[in-house]
Length: 136
Image (cartoon, rainbow, N blue to C red):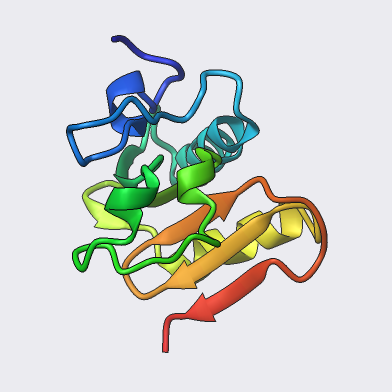
């Protein structure tokens, strides 16, 4: 399988159902968005590399609808262009609000970003108004 970027490996981008071949493609821009955030926070924190935990990437429609995931067919995950993730530096998670603020400033109105209590979401759907906050 192997590494795609400094922080992202191919095996992290596949559907977790275990029965399909759905995966985020190597050239999908969401990979560069997430890696760019990793590079940014590594620089800010003065470390060579942050710890990236991908909690969810591509999902087949069947897995996406499961009770465990609880999403719907409008999700960007079955389209293989979304990643949910956490970034850690020096053993501490970078606050999701800080990551969200960075992403929205770097890509204003360009991509989809979701803010959650324990993770961030990034996807490559085009256009304004594709951001949300479920952190409260």
